[in-house]
Image 1 (tube, one colour):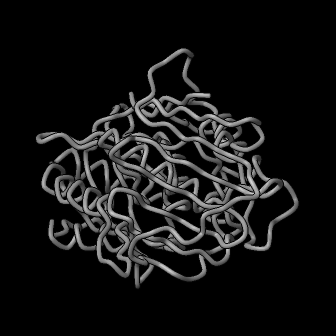
Image 2 (cartoon, rainbow, N blue to C red):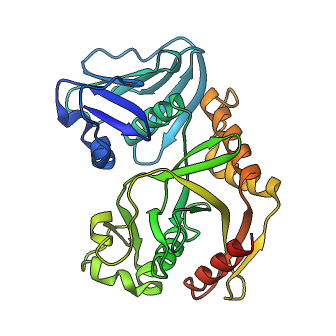
Length: 322
């Protein structure tokens, strides 16, 4: 199976398609016609034999959300991820390949998939950022909105979409920065809508059912959302601005210029991870890309108040002036 990630072809080899089902749920819309020459290869092997003590320096040892305990070992030319007794991952960036070894019947962890996807994108000079992305009304240009989880990216994204903006993604955008321009495209993932978001953006109500999960959220497909608002195709588009999202203290929405250095620090704090050995090569590459981004496009702070849809007018006005 192969996927096309904005020109970067990623191929997967495994005995059973069931082994990569979770990745396919996210990338199914990006499947590539075969045969194609892969720029990055992922081999999945089911085995009882796991090498859990690879050579290298311990970069991480602890719990990760949903997936439990793991260790990350920096072996220089190879990066290892070990889930004791369950599975291992080895990424050889120089060879543009990764190997996942998993015990039979053990589901591949989401952490492993995200690390592999990051490595595959890095091999093609692209980087995943924890941001939302929306096209401007009447334009193909994208605004990126970043903030830590729980700040309101999804609510703001859907509110903007209710005002004519086009939704690329509410949580993960892939960035490709050249010396004088930046482009981005969104991963075609389900949108998790919180009950409070539904109250603030009633337009999405027809997409929701009566049941909520333990986080008081419902996962809604982009296809379903596309029936009531504009959902953009998975194509790289020029980035016109970077917005740092914050909650308004007085209920009023505002959009103010943000110093580029402050924008870089805020975006890096939410997207660049430091381990026991410092920054791994991929994280260094991501930080360098963030630095290029903030010098390429205007940067703003967006304070969202009690009426998130008010942000649409502020963004249109500011970018028209820019």
